Image 1 (tube, rainbow, N blue to C red):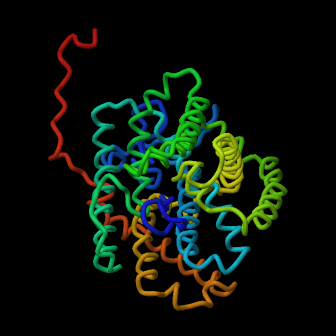
Image 2 (image 1 turned 90 degrees about the vertical axis):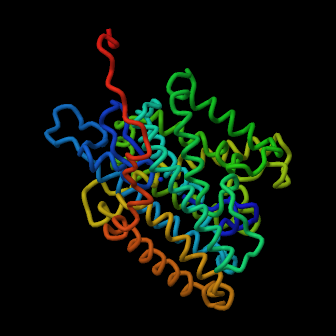
Image 3 (image 1 turned 135 degrees about the horizontal axis):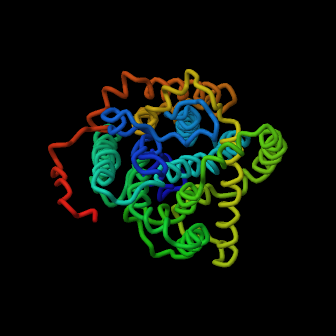
Length: 399
């Protein structure tokens, strides 16, 4: 995640969605797997997967995906807050490992799914710039200044090439979205993406620019999302699938608890080459593929239990980009103020439960409509003034 072992330090730590699945004009879920595009407000069009044949349910925004985004952002925030204190608890470290195995893959998969219609058209490029590039620039600068002046890190510099803390995901999503047309035309997109991810993991010299190591290692999840169809999500929500996940999750918990003291967390952050972690290239390649398989299975288990109906969390799911981008300031402020270092009780069961409840409450508040409206000039701006007007098609051009 970061250059350091803990994801809450510089350069890796998580977590965004945009226009919707094909067919093209129906785009709606935001330019980041975490938000809603401004185009939705202007046109009222939505991008929920089409209803099954014969269904009388009107087309519209599917609450399932908003529920999934809200639940995932809560896990992201809680995991970030656990990082400074979890080493005092084997159980907390094991649970952290489980969460980190699937929470980013889940976000990325949903981002890929809602990028299926991306073809590089002018209106899509505009959403890409306003919904992903602009928030990246603003929050990269904001977090760097916060670290420099509030955190006392005099060596912290503002650079858009080395994403700081959780801004890496916006940079990654920008790159992945641009490559979407390529994955839509190649014959074996997922095997090719997996090959690229393994090759990246075996290449120590990639460097930290735009956190490219992470961008490439997480790429298969974005491509997997591009390959998914509405029926795949419907299949995941079947009762039989939910029941199958119960022994799977129990076994995963036992395995993670057994492995927790002996495994480095750098495997979960995917920001390092296998050689830098101290593993031979051949075994490292197998581990990378194994982690992809585990992440895919746990992501499926997570999505199987996401509620499908409209509920109190559905409205919050539309504002998760705010919860994602803002909760990092809360975690960093606690770190800078010594809250984690000076309160040993936070490493115990009561402390971890307290952190969980507090961070879940904080990120929930940050996802509410008032915060979303306040952040709209940055996260969902209408920057018509910054773009050229599209010229009307010339007569006969379509012939």
